[in-house]
Length: 293
Image (cartoon, rainbow, N blue to C red; front, side, top):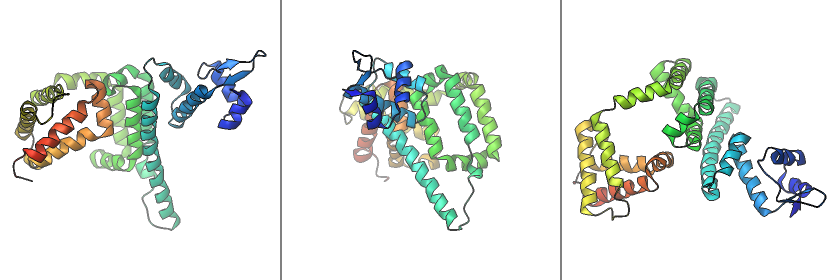
């Protein structure tokens, strides 16, 4: 056991902050001395470490408490997700540092203002806090939406370039995105109502394929489903978009191997959904695809 002073010295967190965490129910001491002094054991320090990681990622204290109080909270899974988000954050900072190094040398680099998506990012944060039900329904969880926002921050330059290309300016792009967020429910209802029959059938085929999880991906029945998905893709997509069979298989493998995509789809369809699709398409590409590599 450590006293509050020892805990503060070990962690670098002030005594007043630890007292505040206790007051709001975020981090309660492990026990109290007969005189009423707070004591913290190793388990409490592990929880404090988790809190600090969430804070570093911009989570408000209220949300951190809610996450930690969830009955199915998985500490190891949380560490993995936090690591992924921090790596995205680090990569963005590294790129900003590189830009500053070029500017220090007097090189003519594009300014930050041209890629300023702060207004749009603020709108996304506001949407997260005011439309949590919609966020969870369409992204699987608030944490998934945080990852979505962080990926935009990480790839801000590319997003801004596309925005300028498609809308003419960051301002027009931001206004369009704000409108979409403000009318998100109506837009999603309209999109769902008008979704094409081909897209729905393809989605059903992927769900049927993934329902075979636990079965050998090389089995004839599974590979027949892969073949049906590929055939439908060539029916509804321009050939120059998906290329040959092997190229389409690689597109699917890359898409369903993506950490962000797999988190969203696995949360919606069940753990292992994406991994099984990847295995099935990889087998087809390596063993059954026509000789058009």
